[in-house]
Amino acid sequence: MVGTAAVAVAPRLAGCTPYAGPYGALQAADGNGLRLPARFSSRVVARTGEAVAGTSAVWHVAPDGGAAFPAAGGGWTYVSNSEAGAGVGGAGALHFDASGNVVGTTRVLDGTTRNCAGGPTPWGTWLSCEEYDSGRVWECDPTGSTAAVARPALGLFSHEAAAVDADRGHVYLTEDKPDGRLYRFVPSSYPDLGTGALSVATVTAGTVSWLPVPDPSATVAPTRSQVPASTAFNGGEGAWYADGKLWFATKGDNRVWELDIVRSTLSVIYDAGALTNPVLTGVDNIVRSSSGDLFVAEDGGDMQLVLLRPDGTLWPFLQLLGHAGSELTGPAFDPSGTRLYFSSQRGPNGTSPGVTCEVRGPFLP
Image 1: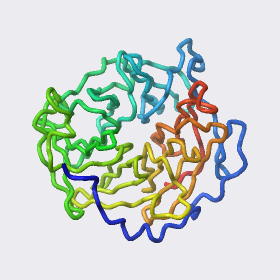
Image 2 (image 1 turned 60 degrees about the vertical axis):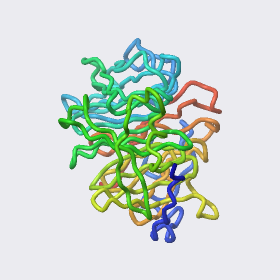
Image 3 (image 1 turned 90 degrees about the horizontal axis):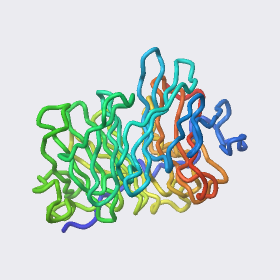
Image 4 (image 1 turned 45 degrees about the horizontal axis):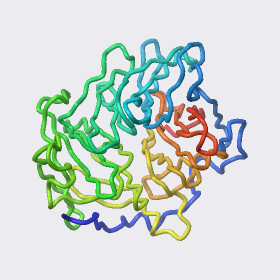
């Protein structure tokens, strides 16, 4: 078995300048406990166990990975996973009208376990990933009008995130294990995810190649141990694809990686261990803004959502006070790019119901 990927830190990390962000300093906490830049504001849009505004339906426990989708009439939908165990996980959705009012909520997936992260597809569905050894990927309709469909061809393992490369018709998958792997799924007939080939990454001197996984259903051995030449990644977390590149995080070593798909090269663009006073720890979910900035959520750390810019500069975009012991999850932008959604999975002090928030403001275009 090849050990954890030994890849040189990208040169731009050496120029990392904490707090050199485009939005200015964080202000004092608002009434929701959020420290935000000037000209930004927040509101709570849902709380675990409480009825969503204007409905009788309660919001789910342990809100985790999420994404936003355009809806009819200029509105949008925010889908959020539930990382609850024992078949009581799944995913729910908040529906907004064109003015940003919450107008409904829908369950889009039920009866599943530890739905952690996932990812949106270019064709408007949500891939909800189960984080346990025989976990599956479920393709969900954000409106809830069509039943979710299991996609076992994407492998049975401790899934974390999924990111779709629409340019080549591939799906990349992270695995949340200390010896997890990075996978690539090539559908037989994109965008149908019903059948296809699953492969696993092997990294040699910073160059990535892909080897087939013999048994994606893991009937005899875990997928991560089926290919001895594959490369281990320490706790795969969030992933995002854009412009020929895949970014993903590994929580075990507090790194953010960049895979250049065209060149088949892998580099580390953030490594907390390389910094004396790292701003970002507990790297988790990732979303990319229209300006090309990565927003990386902390699982623990200082409960910050941290901006990682293409030039390597780093800056806390927001901080949630009073929620130590929780984690920030599900960052996602609405279709206009002016509203950002996320959750505190376990709420204040890490022992309370989860809280899902919206932040509005002048995000860079």
